[in-house]
Image 1 (spheres, rainbow, N blue to C red):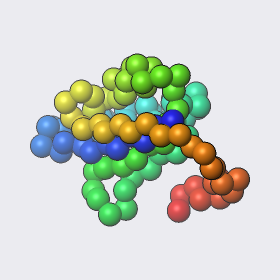
Image 2: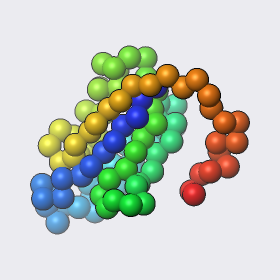
Image 3: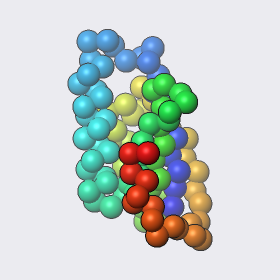
Image 4: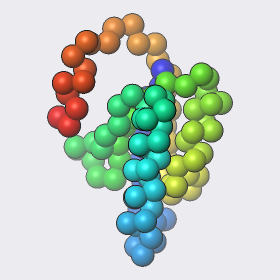
Length: 99
């Protein structure tokens, strides 16, 4: 499993394209959540224009291919990826959606 930290490079996002790019970014989230690759997605509450994805993929190359499809890739955001092993997952995790 992977943690993906995304930080937008706002200085590289033309204001006239900001809304369109954000919609594309959200569509990318939905596509990979629907396909089961993105398990949790959300913005940071203590940092603007940044967020976190908990993801799963067959391997790092597969994850990199998914990341490359984001409208902000490769130069409008920084993507920091950490791989981890989920040894414990709370059964009530879905109860925290939106919190």
